Length: 66
Image (tube, rainbow, N blue to C red; front, side):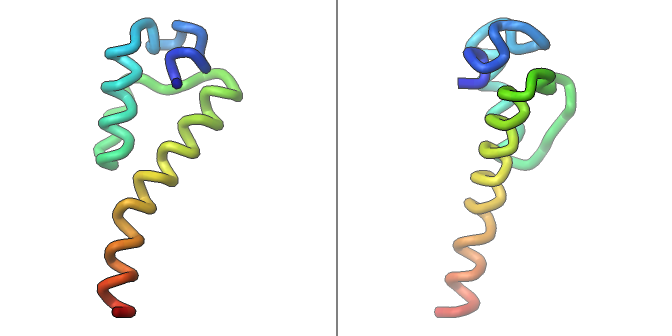
């Protein structure tokens, strides 16, 4: 998705490199070696980052409340 959003530029020159970025972002490691530069790419990145945080926060909240 991010490869398509960035148009194959700005470090997202292949689908595997975009997948690498998504994996690093979702696992919250965030090397910073590849970053989106377009507005649409940043929007997609922000959504993916929030999904990554949600994957950590929801189970934690459920265990505290339940």
